[in-house]
Image (cartoon, rainbow, N blue to C red; front, top):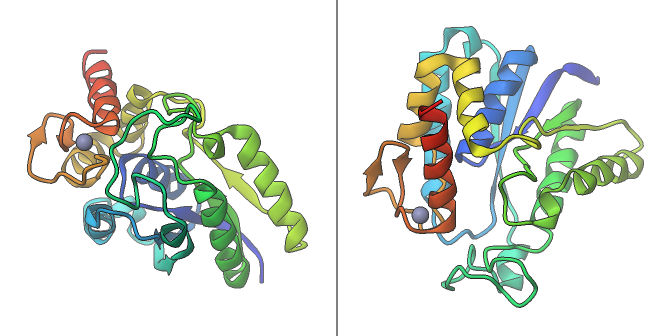
Length: 233
Ligand code: ZN
């Protein structure tokens, strides 16, 4: 049976997908989560997922009954293809194609296809993802056009209507921090600082006011600047 009151959130354990999860919990009667093990160099994001889910269950009573099953899917193909700084020990820098070496070609399309297949089986038609074209490095699979086209393709391919919600699409990082505060108050901002992982180097030893990270990689830089802008509003 298809149920439009349930959403499936692509939840990585990062700041963006945690904000998306809160957004979905605020709007849908029931929310399931899915994560992907694609051979990422650092496991800290995957390790953060259960901690964040547990904290949401115990610390946010308004969401306790809404937060449902968590799913973990392996997608080994991306690692086998290789060539990305997210799956191999490579320096993160601008590549000749004008994209950073952290670009994993097709990653979001793999994720959305797998998520839609899982959603289909579970009678869910609303997917939620943290793709954002504002602050990013021009990853083409984060663009609104790509996501809209993917929703159409998946709907055609499974002969059903999928909606892919991307609440962060037009937000900058400061606005993502503000969204967390709006949805879950200071408690959600604190949880985001303490537990969510953004750093490309998977650093969990250096603590800043915006959370843990190496403080030097492009992802830490974005997160730090966004937090500073949010904190000084
Ligand atoms: Zn970093």
